[in-house]
Length: 172
Image (cartoon, rainbow, N blue to C red; front, side, top):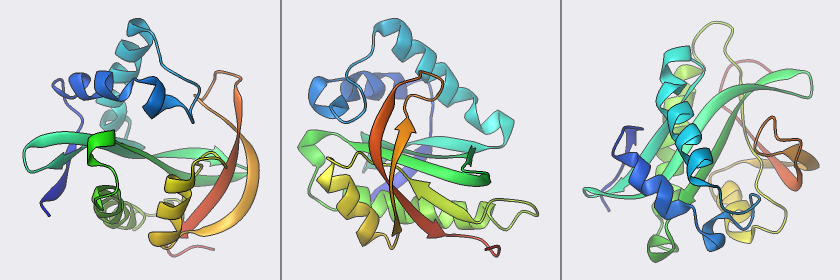
């Protein structure tokens, strides 16, 4: 299977719109307005410039079929990497998310070699999102526990999530 990650670009806005459906966004607060999508797209484009992470389009061959990201954040007194992903419904259940997750973990492990970089990669899927929780297990993450997780960040909206962690660096 030819799955690869491509840094977020202007053409990926069309993918973001395809992801913005009730089915795809049911575990993360629902669909967003066009203005919210455009603001999200601009944030994704800007991520590499601050050096704290990157959003990627997931490609199957030449077709954009999903997205996956990592970025640094503060979590419970520690600096961590956080990840999240989407795969369009017509491409789910084919191993694409696992292939994209494996590729992302390799990227984050390389980033974690930087002095002072976080050593843990966390994912925070909704407790009700069985496929994403299963993917965390498949990728080798360990379940830390459940938590109330603000998403989108800065929104004040809390979702009940599982906190999954994968060690990617040399620290504790």
